[in-house]
Length: 517
Image (cartoon, rainbow, N blue to C red; front, side):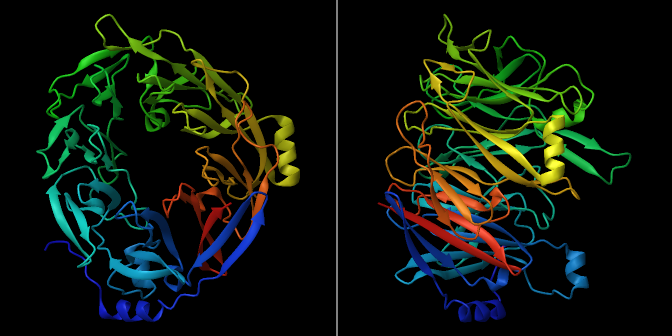
């Protein structure tokens, strides 16, 4: 089979010998909770490797495996110089939980052509999918081979080097609890709906891919138009939409899973918007631009009324001290023909002074409505002087809750955390800010990293403040930034586990924090 990876004898022997894992377990009481730390390791093979962590459960009743995807961070040229002649520099390691801890059960070599990895829901359970050579492959856990499922050409081609392999290729577009494929192509976006018997024929919708190059054709960048899922005709099926300078071009989905070949317009009152951040970087100069830039952030049902809403991000910069960011919420409703329409003015504006690092949007309280979690830093002369003296930056974590369709101007709760500033590179080591239901009560708890050895847990509560004012603490070695955390309910008990990736003495270290009452 073309592109089918295999395990060499040498890696097999080496990792069979290394599979006698030492699992250290510690239990500590924290207020009404107890936590257990189990270390997965030793992980000798992960030195100088980029690591992706992916929880994977074949069946809902099973304890999920932990997949550690390792990718060499060196190019082929550097590997040759260093004398690294392994058959593959990329592997997927399957760790299974046993009575003695997390043990390595399977190790799968990846070819250099395997550019993307994702999990897909199928009629027979979750499967691990890979993309290479214009084809989708499913991993056979019995033979440890990737078997071709269907042809699907796309803009993804070439050697991906040491970049992350994880990408969201699969989405449930028609609401049947099976994941469908939505992937960009040079001629538009390609769609293949999954059925009980496999995938349907490919459909292509939307505008063609944009190509940019610098002075010569040696450097070429391809950019697909941002795709949005929206139920424009209120039939319970997601339609596919693209922003087109003043309106959304919507390709409707019918009951047979077919998408229209021509689009209908979904008008808005905004015509000065961009569809993604890459366009902002190309078309706007934020250091000199005085007019605000608007970006289509997402289309999502914010207030849980069954109708999609529009979220727009507005960015304004007037010099280094003039940064302002806002989220404008345009609620959706039905017009006289029962088609989607957005409000002409925003129902809410979430404003933050200074530089906004990112935002998360999720249902924290368990009522179906979406909360906003925004991290930002004040940019002022006083803040800069303080950063120069302390080499740290104060980061505000603000959480906003919707009530009667409106977000209040002030956050429902706010925390201030300290981030390390590297003057040499200008990078800010952002601590982790996570939400996870570690108590199992259906409410998300707030997890905030404090330094390199403390994870503060603010338990979720009823009421406008949403979280306890006092935190309980987990003490252990933590990553330098918030990128080394993964949240998942591994054992399906209603409580989330936290997977922590850190490094000590150039040695990868992965731990699983489990919680109980």
